Length: 123
Image (cartoon, rainbow, N blue to C red; front, side, top):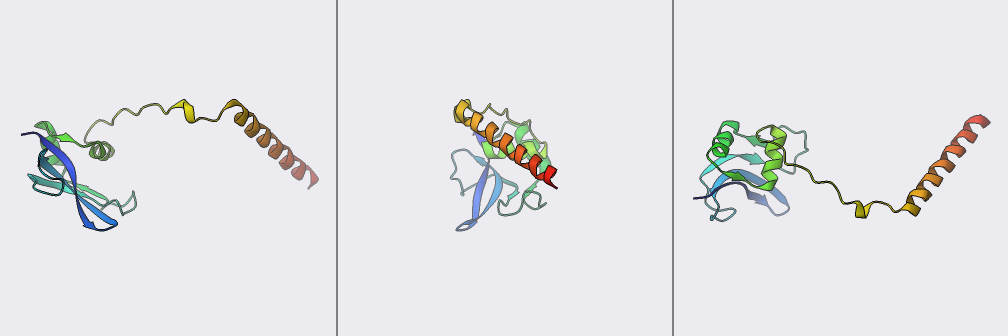
């Protein structure tokens, strides 16, 4: 039996609330689970203490016996210090501004700097 640590959705429409559960990978998302490990409320601010509530000992146990967390839970557990943070990939360069746009931005910055100096010297 392959065990996954995943989010099970609760709450109402447009007000999500998740339980962090250990479940058989073949069970439905909101269906049968083996054990409830905590809760996650994305509607709360990121610094709120009730946003993520986890039973650390049980999560460590399930990770120790081979349970695989989902991608979102890897990020959450990494923030809590339970697992190693995933490697972040380098952003593609394709979306970076091209040479002409960079030149225009530099010219605009220089013009703004010159206008600020002129305003300071007039005072």
